[in-house]
Length: 277
Image (tube, rainbow, N blue to C red; front, side, top):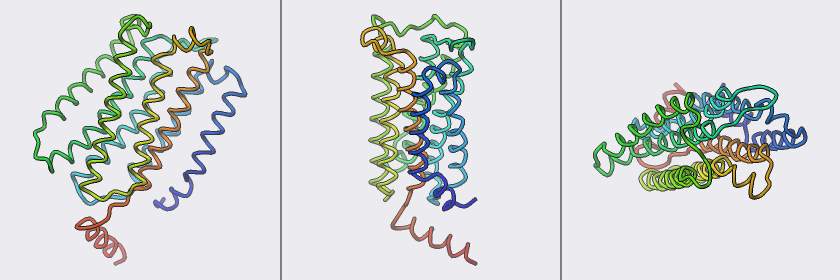
């Protein structure tokens, strides 16, 4: 299936319609999506979309820039995968069993996604800035540590807490927002070196903001539930609605890549000429 057909099938209007349909059905059915974990399983659609994006997108013909795009696509896949893992981490019965460790692990997946974007951006920027691999190696080490923590929290559910008198929710929120801002700054810096379309940059920025917003209801669910009398299922719905919006924007961003000027334009024209022959 070619790129044009994919962009037409999964156009902005189609993805908006899908997001609105999910919100409408979830709200009209009360706690149904919450009770049976359906709200998480919708992420399978976006896992499929992330796989499609790996094969159907614009290529830059720059092996270093491609590392950024592939790392970002890996981030999209990990982000979507987070809620599948969350689904199978919960004890299923009449109601879904949520524990602080399950919610923290979802945040850990979000952190890994943001770090992957930063690693991909640094792989490109370090060539232009002539920097060492130290920052990338540190991030790879942190990702490895988070993966270990995810496995540990799966078996030791009481190890960490999101109680408001505990530093964990504040630390996680600060780190996620910090990594999100760093990722957006690095995307802007890549844009200074390569004329990537503003559509790609804006949509990817919006997606990262939605990632950050989707974390807040999870991390501060106790405050929303106890202090603001917000039902737990609505807390989870709110986080997921931001989550789906982020994945939709992420997918659309890669359909807006348009690299112009210099050697990139020459390589693109040469490729199109070869394809025509």
